[in-house]
View 1 (cartoon, rainbow, N blue to C red):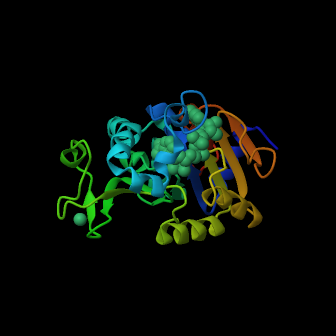
View 2 (view 1 turned 90 degrees about the horizontal axis):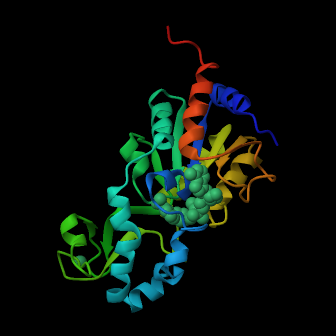
View 3 (view 1 turned 180 degrees about the vertical axis):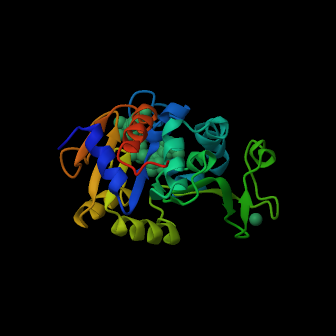
Length: 252
Ligand code: NAD
Ligand code: ZN
């Protein structure tokens, strides 16, 4: 395993199909807590609130908790330099896709367009009674327990709960980009949430160079990571972008 920012930059500049795979860590500096680690979401809440059965059985009690866990913080959050770096690379044709496990919309807010939301999103909900998709407006979220504006039915946030399948279109696109990738940039993820966590292994098996950015070693580090850049995503990504410029054909 290598630790060189310069080597990572060289690989990125020469990539034919650079793909980023992101987890909660990329949004930590935007003020959104990760699941694990000190101050993480699981220090404060019981993970069973994101189990579908539990949610359905305790609808009125769980919704306020989910609002507090995700919506209040996420709606206020702004992208950080890590999100902006990826958006800039995409605009310039260097990065082909972002596959994210996050549901916070920050890649899109930063300007990324090809964002594959592996675990869904917080923008909308699906009515479990009439089947309609309902945008989660401030108005709906201001209700103590949100209900479908069309039929009064129960709304399930459009993100993936424990035990639910991955949205098929996202799963298909993610695998397609993973298998095409020659440089796979893994940012801020522990690598333990299956099946999302399997994607970097697929990339590696298919011959990609795996570059990892994380505050701490993850499940990938020491196994499939070729270059490990330890630190905060919001600091490493801009530094990596600056270094990458040295290896790109000059624009003037
Ligand atoms: P996780 O919370 O399990 O782990 C976060 C990872 O990020 C750790 O490896 C940690 O070392 C690293 N990290 C923390 N701060 C960092 C920083 N500043 N820079 C770089 N790395 C940093 O997250 P996960 O592996 O993504 O899995 C949790 C699941 O929780 C995901 O599926 C995701 O859907 C969901 N989740 C999403 C959000 C969000 O949308 N922002 C927030 C929390 C959890
Ligand atoms: Zn409805």
